[in-house]
Amino acid sequence: MTFTKKRIIIPLLIAFLLLLFSRGLQVFAGGENNGREHKASISLCLRDPLDDSAIKAGRFSLYKVAVPAGVSGEDQELFAYTADFHTCGIELKLEQADLVARQLALFAGDRQLEAADQETVAEGRLSFSGLADGLYLIVQEGSTAGYYALSPFLVTLPMLAADGSLIYELEAKPKIERLADPEPPRPPEVTEPETAPELSAPPETEPGQPEGPEGPGKTDPADVDDSRLIQTGQLNWPLPLLATAGFLFFAYGWQGLAGKKDEKADAGCGGSEAEQAEADAGAGGGGSVAESTGAEDHVDQS
Image (cartoon, rainbow, N blue to C red):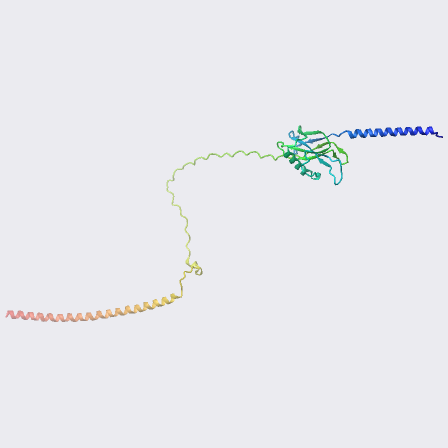
């Protein structure tokens, strides 16, 4: 089969037209994708940690903290702060997301920043929808009765899944802690009124005298340790000398007293002899007187 020049040009022209058409479709499709903005959402599911019942109260605020920086790399930041958080001075370290979230929540509260959206929990769920790509901060306003307030946390939209796909509709189940149940109030203790004791009749016989407390026991002098007696400064060595001197004085005095008694006895004996002599002399004199009296009587008679 022979090809003429005309037969060769026609197939080339058709191939060129097909190539132009396919390129046009590709450019049109790419422009449509770049112009369409993805809208994401964040849903929170709040459940009781004990019975898994729905928590039907609570209010949350959403803050848009940062937007994608548009560059990537080890030395490049993935996100750039929005105008509200541009002056916070907090380094965005996603590996310390909990600490960064608390710091950003304090900054938003101090500056009284306006939240991008606020939602109230209904039937244990709430949702923030129509969100652009970026980094968001979720803060609970106050606390729910019977539960601790949730700690602030960060959410990245879209979120990268384990298989490399992007998740635009994110559902989070934050951990909620229940407050400890207070102890039931104890009823006050009721004390019965004291009744007056019944007075008993006095006993017919007088009660005996109560025995007094026993006095301290006597200590046997033989049991006293002489070596432990208190020294008063008296010396013991003069005692034998004084005893000997006293004995000598006593013997000398006794001898003198005995001599005096003997002298008195001798003097008594001499006196009795003299008295006897005087008595005898008196008797003789009486006879002579009688004789003289008899003589006188004889003269008168004559």
